[in-house]
Image (cartoon, rainbow, N blue to C red; front, side, top):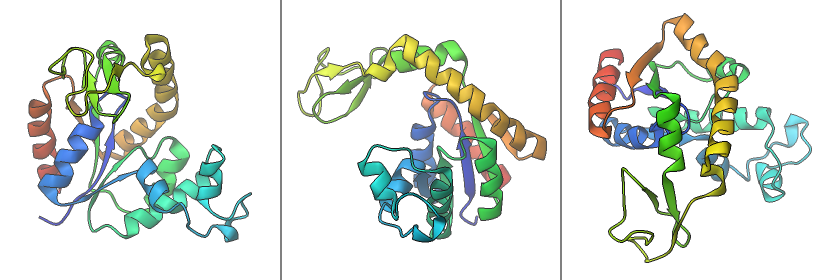
Length: 215
């Protein structure tokens, strides 16, 4: 099988990171995220793009939002260097979805379906090591000693953006921006849905079969 070109979609907490890691290992493709692409190309020359700064680094160092046009260019550069990929975190809106069509031909848009309350449970239950950043969950992935990181012994904390109020706000923004993207791929007949509410290994079996069927 040729290395597939996959777009993975799903709300925060749907399991995109977990399944993307399995896809990259099984199919020998690159995992391309917007954040990684930005960090990997932060010194890219964008002086010809009529932007305020000449490199993405200047936006990032100032804590400013990198313009869509710059993000599009960086994602296109990352995709051009990959024989196959799983793209995660882009496109976030319909305009970016249309840009993506000009960059590459996808084999599959894969949607991890998870209900709202399950997403809230997953995200509000996340705990992060304050020292090394390792993730845990109060129900699904508990440390050996409650509140203490297995890796470094650091304190496990709940991030500010994992409180229920913030999580529900994040999900509302996600639905508002990304529902049109999902509808776009559904209308084109490119979207395949996978039930993401099961155990990760069960989800993976379905994801793997869906990719093999599409590619």
